[in-house]
Image (cartoon, rainbow, N blue to C red; front, side, top):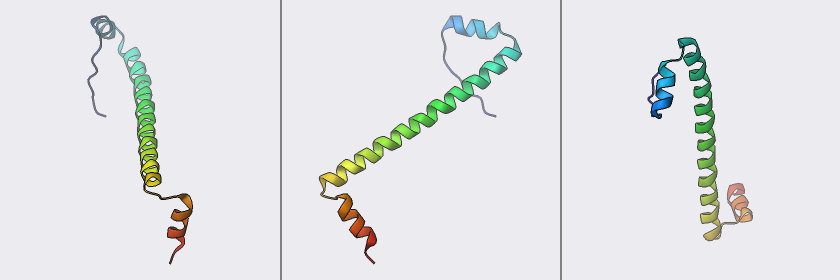
Length: 75
């Protein structure tokens, strides 16, 4: 397991230091899940944006779905 550092305000940092190890562990697991979910959604959104840019560029260059299918079906 790796450690990461997150910056928080002074009040949050103090509350964290004054919290039991058991509660910190539970919060850490919840935070890890939230981070994973957010990062995966971000990757998916970036991929979708990239696909949209590629579609736009292809359309701008005259590549239609029909032409693409012809190209793919050629031997």
